[in-house]
Length: 127
Length: 172
Image 1 (tube, chains in turn cyan, orange):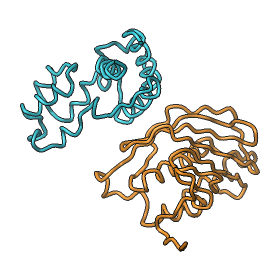
Image 2 (spheres, chains in turn blue, brown):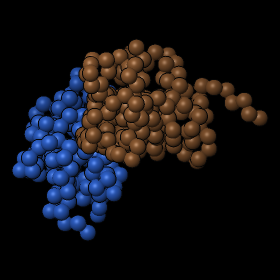
Image 3 (cartoon, rainbow over the protein chains, first blue to last red):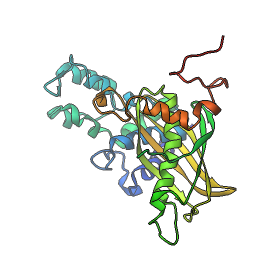
Image 4 (cartoon, rainbow over the protein chains, first blue to last red):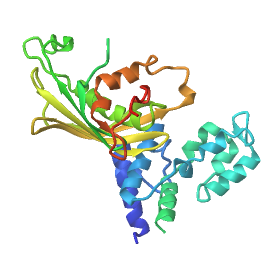
């Protein structure tokens, strides 16, 4: 079974290739959108390349639970409600949501995804 | 002006791979000035041919229900850039991944036995949120795939002849 370092090295390789960033920039806490400059189409490519590299199937909803943000039950005036935040925490148990909670604008959710979140999803799949 | 960057499909395996050919002719207007005494097919239009081969493979796989647009060219490497009138390009696209949101294809183009270019293309699938903007006028896409011979050479995922969804089945 692959070690954490091996998985992180493989994720780093995918991100360097897809986002044309330096290896040193890909730290566990780096956010894909703000720190590494990923756009929506990049996230799609990253998911495809991670699936290919690790031989797993990744639903984009596992990384960014977009279905939650289109549900009027959990979104009011463009912001996630406390009930919505509770579900988000359950769906992304490893994500650091503290900054997002201060201003839970739906449009900011993709910005919280970090390299470590990618690792956690892959590690769960490989377990 | 029609946006034709392949001449016809030579192989079409639904959800898997497509091959198409494109003959470069001196009569094509863009070659008259590119360049006047040394006409060369622009590499950007060769990439368009690759994108059209792959894009129609993906389009058919989604039942023509999504707007399939080229979203990213992660990599295309050219070994040969001097493609001139008289050359026949053979495009190939292999669908690596197709899901609701997008798709990724490995593509290549040969001139005879020579590898001209190879790479990877990523497509975004636009859904109902873009319903107000038409990618093609009504029927144009279907006409295009018929002109390209998709239903002449195409097979479905089970290897049976590909059926044109907009033509009535006349077999008993």
